[in-house]
Length: 431
Image 1 (tube, helix red, strand yellow):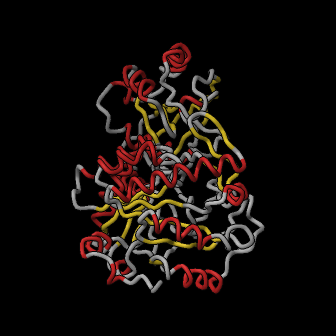
Image 2: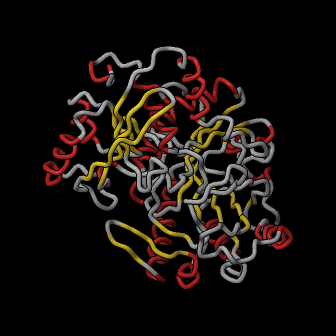
């Protein structure tokens, strides 16, 4: 079979990929993207992945310096759009899986569509939940989806995936890999038949799946996939594969040359962070951290009279705002305003939510009500995530909710900047 050249692709498809820097090598120099990290959870554990490790100088999938709510994501998009005229694509690539936190992914897309009808949307997923959410993806008008598919053979897949969590049950070994593959293939087929342009990412892991990748490429070609992106393994610190060698570019390009005979190959991938911004070759994510934006707002207010607020924080170890409201067994109570806060006390509570559920079941009402009663003297709750019913109950008590994921110090300053403009009595602070 000869080389699959651009001339063999219809004009309609070429128009669709022309503004997407990941799908078009030419577009990478003309158009910018923004990855919005609104989906922190993941339903599989890949042995090459460690999402807890973040370095500002590192470009690797799963890395982000902040996790945003859909509301903050909309604000960040508007901010970046003002500064980067060539912004053409909004991507959601985690830092977990876009479909594992589908409610946040969907809300983010709907929020941005309301203010920009021309922007392109792109999702990256492991594909486990594609059979469930593919119809909604199509209905939302998303035209670009990337699926990471590393193996067709369950024995090989078992070496790559530590576990798969699906519909409340955990799977391991070949059974996990087989389940994942079945959902990936079904979802890919549905998307392609629905007119979605699908790109397949494949991580090349020497000695594990490198001899198997050409078979993966042939299979996805049968399904109508547009392009495959064979990526080198980046041994992530703390991952099961941290001691494996990084795949060399010589080996990678030799495999790409072979697979190019079957399907178009992406050769300009930067293996972007989950919060990447800008052109592919110049990530500006640290420039556009929401922390920088809020610091500017605080600088304007720093000479104004500062009120004293009491803020309850959910944090696993007291460093990061990294815990769901319903998962907390204690709340850190800080008091202060503006730039300085002191930890006044720690309040123990009974956790009312477990696992990946929404924490809104009826049998959780009593425990949730006790927690809200314990926080009634606070101006605000600073938490990574919170369920709908808990949020509404807190609002009825006049307690402001701030969903944020960064350091506790940064989160407290941001929370104070938000409370300062509130009209109701709870915002008056403690003297």
